[in-house]
Length: 389
Image (cartoon, rainbow, N blue to C red):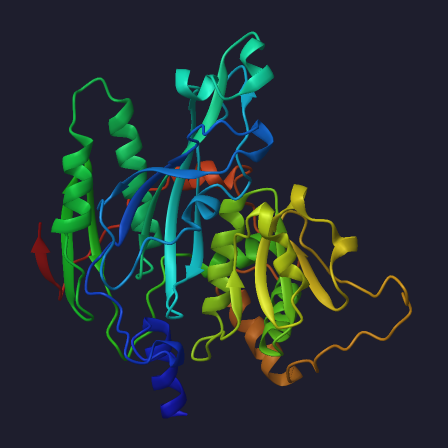
């Protein structure tokens, strides 16, 4: 058991993952900062593809190149043009894998801005539409380390500074977070830094402690009741194929991280894409176990293969797909967890304030809630050594 826990911790930190033999994660906080939008190339509007328009650093790291899929992951809904008032900004996270198998974390803030003259020339018939036209832009931080909430706050602050009337050199702020803020070592040392009006403290847990997680596991009980969470946990332990669906990308990524964290000290070794771009939905046809998340508007349950567990995070409903050619076929379900342990778990959840029936209330717009979340910092620094940047 001690060996299992040790190996799982190493896998979670990425240093000794089976797919990373000889590849240790870089000793830097952030890998890349990118800005994603659309650069017209003379193609039709139906072929608009999210493209990296700005990035830092300008040259790839020797140990990790900027992935070509970062544009799609930063705009999973694809590019579109909207007329009238610009939609509200939203924040979400995503995960992807590097060529060596390491998990890469992405924090993203997506907002809408007026279409530029260069973009307008490539919009074809849309040039003649009356009224303001807006196109999405995303700013994203990529990292080997799961400081998702902290990176989210950094991006929100950069976005706020870009709208401020007070002149601020955004390039110097980005350079500061990318090159000058060090990665905190595991243990009792906290790195504290200032970015504009934001003050953040970053800490990594000790090696023999729970892995780094900046998503609340309580979110699970805002989407599903206790019985459904336990059932989903059982299905994931049995390595089922799971599709999470919601009309909010922020909810998909946060729920995916929370349910994955429950597996500790075990580790999910299969495909894990909590935010799946609309153009990559064919991945759901895979016969191998996976956990994937997709927007409700882009999901056609009838097109999924049999025995896929579909979890609707907006309604709390769970269902398993069947073979359309044989709707009465037997569905193979894993055996339930032992009743004694499940009852003890429910008692413990009840003591923690979790409703065993029904779900806890949640903001209607979870992506906007992330934008206005309080900064992640250490209010109690007792016993910590602080490095101020």
